[in-house]
Length: 259
Length: 162
Image 1 (tube, chains in turn cyan, purple):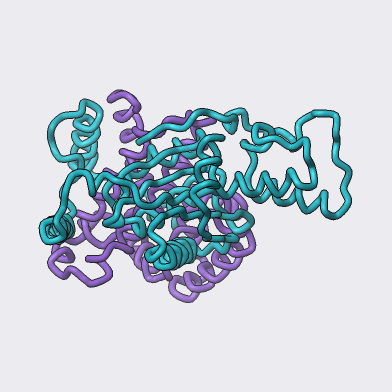
Image 2 (cartoon, chains in turn yellow, orange):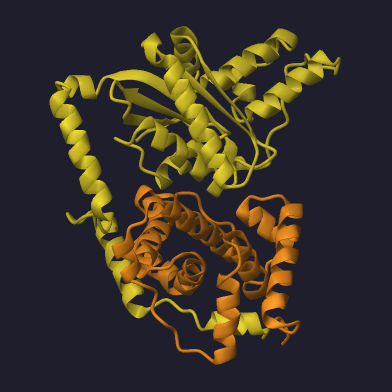
């Protein structure tokens, strides 16, 4: 055993730490009515008080809190949409595919600010190995509140950059606004707006391409294929799949889940 | 969500591994508890099956490293919550040379500590570490080389000898 290995061997989890963790997990599994986590000290109290004051002075009502004013869609290949209210808080998260569901099972987004939610989503897709140097993250915003659009876009862009820089990776990223028509059409096809737009671009050069043949592929793959067609690559008109199938059966399309 | 018995198995199997990752990054015990809860809750909530024991362990290490980073990024830690520091790491009983080695590892820049641990203790290759940490292979080779150099300066050339 090398000396470093021998030294690290001395570090072991304390029995009390393991016991506390197990008690916490048991409570979580049994849905016991105890706090899910040890309270995060002053932070929760401070944020709760600030939020309560904001709601009180802002003329809070149930309806206004639970009314969506903006949709933010994140696509790496985990594809996730968060619905944001007028207070900038996440009121719903939706996964377009199984990878998205996996990410949503690992993080809690409800009632977080869209800025925090952005960082949490990016952290999770990096932690799960989806977002790396050679990958791309596309984020779209659809909101009817045009006065807030540029601010939200800037916030999301800066938080994406912050999150990826903290992981010391430099993937491609793009953040842009889409119309309600595009977002609704994409939602109806159960794909993100960014992927929907990428497929529309592909269909211009490869008319036989369909949403179903592309939905399991990343936006980067779809754009690469579009570029290949632009560059004169042959396209099979035979009706076969437009893109090669991924080798991971878990990447197949699944209906999204609301969280 | 996984069952209680699966949670118990994971804690028994991987608690020491997660603890060592925490040791590399955390200075107080309450943060360690936070990380433990985060990591094993994510494990319990994970739906997709693991391909193998190695896949499961690598996933837990990656989640633990990121959970530690999350604690460092939190608002109160950035601002410095001095009372927290009172709840410091417990001291471990170990030979003097082991303590010197761990002190030297902890004196390394944070990003080097993980690669030293993963390379020398867990036995991962640089390529595997790159995949595990989501980094470029060349980056890992560079970090590993620089970390070894710093340890050599601190401990002498035989720090990794059998």
